[in-house]
Image (cartoon, rainbow, N blue to C red; front, side):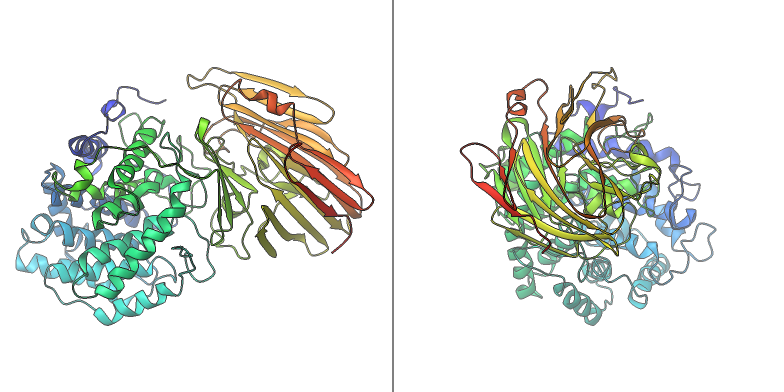
Length: 620
């Protein structure tokens, strides 16, 4: 149950002081959970892929992402006494709370980056108070980073952050290995400011809140020693910002897409790094508005435990959507967004008037992440239509996080709870296929895809003898999906629309359901979700998935078109409706797209006066 009296929920988040207060409101509830020696932070009993000891060290380190900027900007905290003691004990091999030898690909290598930031921003708090022996222990423990391999992705920047910290305090650092890692990261660069998270990896929030974030810190700290690379990082970030701004709505919410979404308001950390480094891709007032509105939105969500600590989940506590590496302290990665606290009060960022988002186009084609973004400004709705990816990172629920047809900030997306049936699978914005055994397969990877002439095209193979060709015609509130399924086996198909919450903000059920021969619709206080069968045979269903499958709402309903497909070629065309203003725009529901068959062609009409789309009905 959300505790409404938490001070952070009434914080106006309008000034630098408000943001300082927000840090205290977020982090002072942690004090009872530090270990006796202060080197560990134990926030819960849930497990992750690393040991509990490492998870507790992770919780300790992640607070530094906000604590160090607070100190750099002149702010103080009662946590510093705890942190100095924790660092002394955690890096002392003779102490029972010693953080230990670091292994290859160790989670501790991730957490070392926060210490690099702290050494660079707050040496008077984390370095100078230590004795010479304590300094050497601290340095030696962190220096393990320079002899351990890391995963070939954003992890390469952790070594850079640690060595930047060493450089800032005048200790030996490995410039050669830094350059080697930065050179490899350059190979992840695509176009238009975008990085993939590793060679051939996804484009997700790891680009903005990791690769760009660290790159901008590098640009700020190394502009004299490495001006060429510093300028390049700023240029790329500025170019990326022109696309990334489309991921944010006017109400402060952002697009839920990809993994590590339990890091929550780290979605805006990129903009914090832009402000810190002084990159004005947009005026400071616009950047300030994105950050502050984003944090206001998050602090009104039920993301807190009763004691004020952060939970694992997205907009509510939810372990089902979490990654294998999400430990109880993991959500505090979100403190990266507090980086502007390092800027003085007279900085132009803090002096600027908070501004709304600039006028943005209704549609943004973003080729590097394979997305087409559509925006409905009147209800702060962002839809990201997705062409899919040729590979998978094999993290938890990868298909749900990267392969759905469309992602929405107003409807969220769902992850499976179990393997049996449509209710456990929670297949919103996906085509799910089964051999009649109620075990469904969805698109795991995309064999071929392209975005061309306002259409997304993709090919995928759920079985070796089943080929699916899918065309998406993006739009809002309607979009159309055209599926051509070639199969050598009999299949059951389910094409799911948006998942919509069935209860209002006070937990009261507010749902109207309509189910007909060719359409199904559900309306609640969160808006309207519907689907129409435009071509093909099938029936309409309202699927009530298992609880806690959706990122935004604990209980949802998914309007779904189902069909039984015989071996051979089958065509299934659906119109999917999503509008997040309750009771409004329903007249558009009554004017859906339509499909006509002319000889061997299907012709889709989105609107009477809009361009039509033609699909040849034969195996390519």
